[in-house]
Image 1: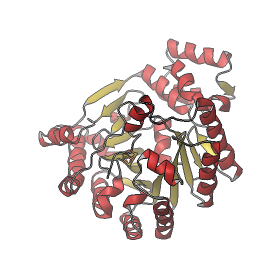
Image 2: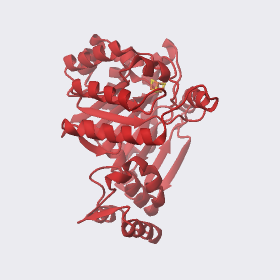
Image 3: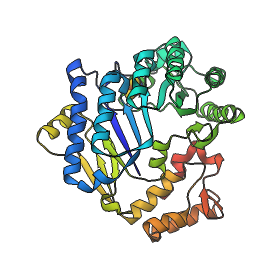
Length: 384
Ligand code: SF4
């Protein structure tokens, strides 16, 4: 089974910290978007006819702000996917939703269209923090959206939070966490703010106009998230993700377990295994530009700005680097079964990390100890 990711490239306004590809887009562009993605799928299936037979058990609409399209266009897009690629009856079908862009009626219609999971971009419950981040929604919008999603009958409602925000200290973050758990979400993502170059927050920090909490404070915030969420029954199943048992995001697990997924829409990335031929995957990347995406499709070609064939070494590195983000870690023998024996440089790097205690060997599994989770990028880079 595979996943399908659709990047919806529209946002009402750019948030101050965000470097995901999105544009405002007018009604005409939004109206035309489902047909573009359908065209992309048709071109893909013409070039790789075997892909039409690989069923999907997760479909994820991200962005951007998918809910800017409204339920009519999102449901049409989902129906367009189902018409081309078999989607399992019990598939997890998620849309991200910005609380400022959805009504109760929208959620009800999305449920009717087949969506069963929603991920709400809350980020904070403090008006000052929402303003500092440049979010368009209010705390009241969050309450309303959450309750509307529940009432509509989504089987899983998740909340995304950001910590390490300008003007935020440990006390304010703890207040956000305490409020978040009162909603009883099925899933919580908590990411540290990382202002990317080119964003307005990055520029404001560079100019001294705002400051972020220091690294030690941010590290304590991470621990506070883990302690607070675990204490009320969430599993810390991935470095930045928590879920009630059984409510883990099945789509994101595909990325971490290096399963295949289609990436549709501007800036979307995919991983195909034509002919089911692991480890020899094909990584695809669409251009982060709606005009370039439209042009390619108009010319009758796949919009892939770049493709990269991944071989055995990539397969091993990716399986370890992504897999070790999860609490469950990885099973080297399963990776070997799928991809062949580890190439020498990978085996060497892995052994070195085990010997120095950076990785734990537990029976057949390798895990990253919790003390390294907050600095996982640094640690896992040693496997790259
Ligand atoms: S709504 Fe999401 S994708 Fe859009 S600008 Fe804000 S953070 Fe980025």
